[in-house]
Length: 566
Image 1: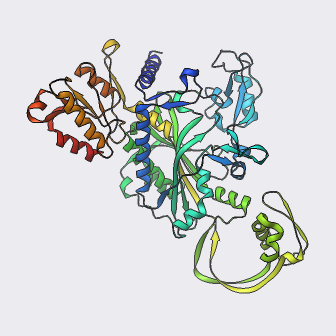
Image 2 (image 1 turned 90 degrees about the vertical axis):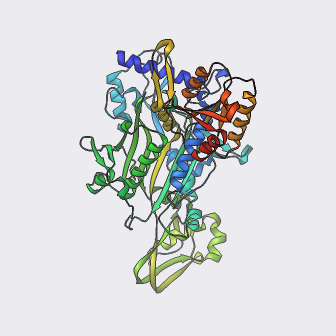
């Protein structure tokens, strides 16, 4: 109990500091706030931007990945094709005493090792048996469980011309619908990837645990398109001696290198292993404590039906183990779904080792007549006609992928009979997707970096943020704002801020010790103090956050060190 109280006390002090110092704070608080919505304040906004920059640079350095940006408002048809309209739901139950809605699986975490994998009927039976207390009022009477779609719906356009739409629940679908343009960009050669950073929206049933579960959140996803028949050529040499904590779907957790886990068949695909290794490096670069990181493999009944392998990166902090990254082999599900819904080709070309001689005997459409007859559906009609056997008869009634019926008359088609030498074939690429919850990662960067020393009124807080993500690069502190020290400090502050990639703050309030403490609290890597010696020789005191070590540098040296570090 004492340990739990200590953890909760630390969490309260941490969240209080983040709020007080303008890092992360409840949104719209003057109007009563709204659950699941948070502001990144003056310090937090810069922290988020630097984390995103590190994420972006890490993946662009791979050389075969590009960044795109797609709208957050997404037409109904897109998310219907992807399966989100039918399947993007959580199971909800409502307290009969206070009407507080809760996720059924969350309420039953103490009664089952993985309630998220249970069906609605299994959850209902467990809820009836366990009768967990309501987190709001403590009552134990619950409504029947119902599936609740989590997407925010909206309308594109006004009046009767408006089209149903949603705020996107993920960034991935924009990369799938843009696939033809990305394929052209890469000169129609696999493998390649597309990535996107941006906002996602999920109308969570009962957002709790601060930054862990949000209704509007920052996410970053990468879709890596591969030929499923081509041998992957990833070089795992850099990770041959790096041991990680793995929790496989079957068997006990163990320590291993990622290449060994791949060789032993625990990780099921080399590109999944590649992104696991690269993600491990990225999180280390962001300042995550690697002793608090593990990879957990999804059990077969936990994965989407189309997934071939899936691993979560879970980070440990004040809320226990939390999923922050998912690395999934999604097969060809997404591209195939959009091709089926639109009739647009979402494929890549694969050359055969040797050309093949094939006899073609079938049907195709006569574009001059079928085009005007079927208009936007002409592509789907053509695909259906070409899939018919040689003995098909017309007129024929065809059901298209979108459910519409098309009656194809004899004049709409023509017979195709020929012998061809075929050099290759069209196929639907498979996709490996690393998906990152940026807000959850930022929370754990802060949680892992936050350190307390002493207690009570003597409590000293220091945030050991890596300088690549520290929101403020330096604090400029005039010992006094007199005798010219204030003017020199102000000029130094402006020169630093004019340096590319550097952000400095000016602080002249209170004792120098109190100002050091304020800088340490939000993770400023160094402080530059302008004092009487500065007036004599033009040097400033450089104080390192982590060690407290102080050295004298010229102003130009200090600016150069910070600008090159940035």
